[in-house]
Length: 498
Image 1: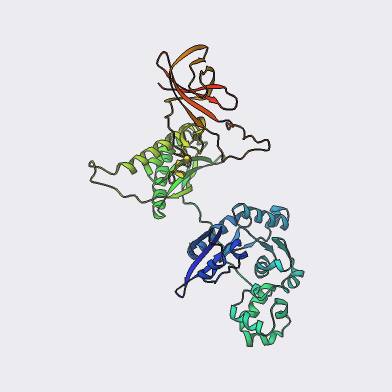
Image 2: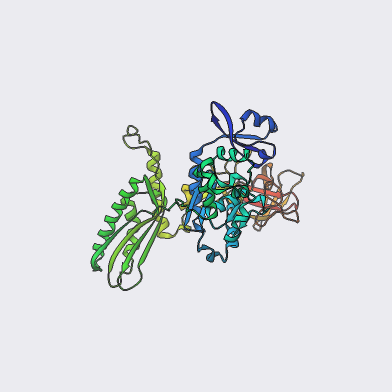
């Protein structure tokens, strides 16, 4: 599929960016949309409006992600990053490993990236975008003595000069950086302005170039320092309550709520005590936060005294504004209130019992009955509430599932008089059951969308055989849900109706 990003320029639709497939077909940025559609096949074209603000915001987030390689990273619109790795190569055992790691991580994020390590930002910018003139690899490393020779065969666009200046140089026969460096330096400012020499000096390291790196926003934090160490629990609790109120007010200014809190008690005789809690939803309700912090605070070892208390929201999330209905049943809206109460209960139980002991049921994309649902920590519920689970209502079932579904199907022996009909007798749990009524079959196939291994079978834990399910009733009136494996003809009892 060819992807085009289009923008309106002078009352006409033009291509702002395109994918590699569209480029191979002859589409280039600046081309009109009608011309681009004429070059591409009539099917398999996806067109989106270009949003520069969204691109810049994504580039800033990508620069934040690049802090794993260096603390100094800046976005370079429209599609690049400038990273100062001075001294950081030691953490990766060399510049080559650092560059390969950065390119591999960018590819893992879904980006096709090229990179270069050079003495200056200007030369690195040029080599990353035009290094295919001298190298075929995605990464290029050039030291200072080779910088001039590496830049010489690159086109004039690698100098980051304006198009008018580049066109004027082309008219004079200068098409590469090396040809520009061969021109008399004294005559360049008069004919092309100061931009050309400034960019050339920046690329060669003869002029300074500064970048404005993105800096991570520190998490909201409040602190109180006592004049002297104290071991009084009531004083410490009163201090924590005040800090919670201050943190809630600070979060309100950011229209955010805490997803994780860390309370640090600085002891005079030992290492600080850290109390960490997690929340299922962004919250800035002081009463709820105190209810979560109070139990572990009461059990904390104060040692010989606490001299400093720090409360930090290590994870925050945006708190959405909700419309409150005041004229329904004489109170507030039931849906937001019920969600808030449920989230508060989940927070309380998860922090007291452990996050893995409070779970919720999540639908999965499968037809196999014992795999339709799975348990997931309830703390992660906020991440999946926005979208409908992928495995919900994936197929229509003519029969309803039993009210009691066994964890694992139980083996049984059955006798069917007519093939593909409900069994007439069933031996299960050591008893002989006579079947008086039955319905079926209902064919349930394995997951066709799961990949098979080299032997043609599916991975472990996935049933690889089709099943024919029947709903049968024994002589005592109990309805059972049984099935027969199509390939092995073995019978199993999978559930019953209470």
